[in-house]
Image (cartoon, one colour):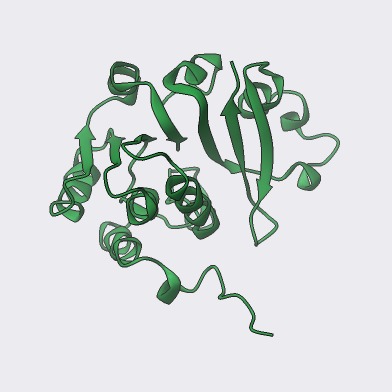
Length: 208
């Protein structure tokens, strides 16, 4: 029986995602939490990229996809590489240097629009989406649900798996992400634990 490829093997990434990794290295942008002990933003993990690709591939024809926090384009690269040929992706980045770099990364991809700006202003005006990846930049609250259609998906990452939380962890009772995904009656949600078993993402489908 053939084993699946290792999720952290860059050779298995889509070409655009490989370019985004090189871009991150060139800009000194952290790829993982371990590279950013000070809490700075990082690229989404490969497991999150693969999850986004699966969801993007399942989007309907003509889908509109949104991303909050382009970083160096890693998540956007996974989405763009898998979404339908007539789908579009809007990704928003507040940092001017990273926004310019990601605009150059996707310069030949007309389906991807990279906006330098505040997602709190851009995303509500562009909504609703068929898939929205919230990778920092806007508050995770019930208002986010309004940014997608009924039946559409919302994803957030940078989550510690519930089984990894100690009983004393403040995230057991005071976590905006958990409160939204597992407290809102408008979302049907699941925690997706990544292959490293140390990180997770929340995936929610708007039901009302």
